[in-house]
Every structure is written in C-alpha cells, then in structure tokens.
Length: 249
Image (cartoon, rainbow, N blue to C red; front, top):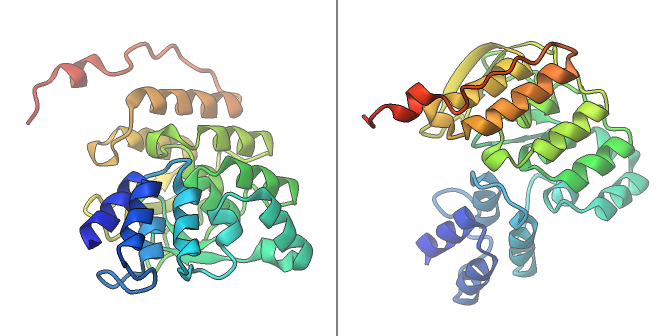
C-alpha cells in the first residue's frame, strides 16, 4: 500500500491517492520518516494536479506543514487574499522546506509558489505587494540568497515559464548574482553550483542530472537575455546536434 501511495504522489494521481487512503492508509502516519503530505510536497513532479492531490489528503484528515502554507500550496488566490486580510504579516513569513530542485531555505511564499509553478498564487502575491527580488536565506555553507526567479529558469517540464513572465513583468532582476546553490540537496541528483546569475543557472539545465529539455532552456535563456536588454543571438543548434547524435554510454 505504501508503494502505491508513493507512486500516486509521483504521478500526481488524484484517484490513485483517494483509492489508497480508502484502503486504510493513515494520512498522518510517517512513511520512512516523513508524513504522507510531506512526501507529496517534496516529490519532484510539478503539475496542475498537485492542489487536487493535496486536497485529497486534507479531506482525509492530513496535517500539513509548514504552518500557514496551505493557501500557497493549494494555489488558492482567494485564500491568499484572506490570509493577508486577516494578518498582513503573513505576507512576510519565511519557510524552510526540503526541495528536490532549487533550495527553499528561508524562502518567501513567492519562492515557494514559483518553485511549484503556481501561476495564480504568484499573480496574487505580487498584486498584494510581495517583493519579486526578495532573497532567500542562506544554508549552512553560506549558499543561497537567490530570488524567486531562480526557481523558474530550469523548472520541471518548463512548468514555471508563465511564472517567469509574471516575475519579469513585476520587475524581477536578471542580473542578481549569488555565491552558489545546491540543487536537489539530499537526493541522488544533488549538485552544487557556484557564482550564479539566473542566466547561468538556466544553462545548467542542460546537465544530464537535471533532465531538462534543451529547447526549453533555450527559450528561457532568450527570455532572460531580452529582459536584460542584451542581444539575443540566433543560437540555431538547439537541441545540440552533437549531443543528440552521440551513442548512449
């Protein structure tokens, strides 16, 4: 049953989750040291089905952390507006979550929404005054300090492309430079990169452990160059013919 649950989380399979819970899976009992909700939140898949999957867990009585994150996790613009009406300081709250990709250490809600590719949440957060250039916290090695745009430039399935456009329209800077980031900390694909701008970080999506489509990376780099007011070369060799033509090793 646990394997079925984890598979449903991986695929964002709403009916699969509902079926496993219906067979008696405890929505709050730890699985390999993590709650079922945490498994769903940390899973590497990014899709529009994530909020529906989370609602299945909530309906089953799951407890979700971090506190106050539900409006963003659910991509619920109305709930975000209600949270700010109730407590304006909610907008400034910071969270730390394990992340399969770009780190979420001392992250704002905008970082979290950008990581998940939640366009509705990003739009309303910006409308309510969230800072598109807010810096995340630093990890134990002093790496981090990145802005929300870093979560969009090599996103899973290019999901965060609309979020990138919203952030750029809101004044997100593309010349921010951070000392480094650890991608996928704690996972098999963990990789630490140094001296990063959004453009440099985007190009790292071409590395094999990042599993990104080179055409998506090309589109993102073009968008960032244009936003920076820099020339956008033709770059016709995408996907790269040499790489595509090499035998697997």
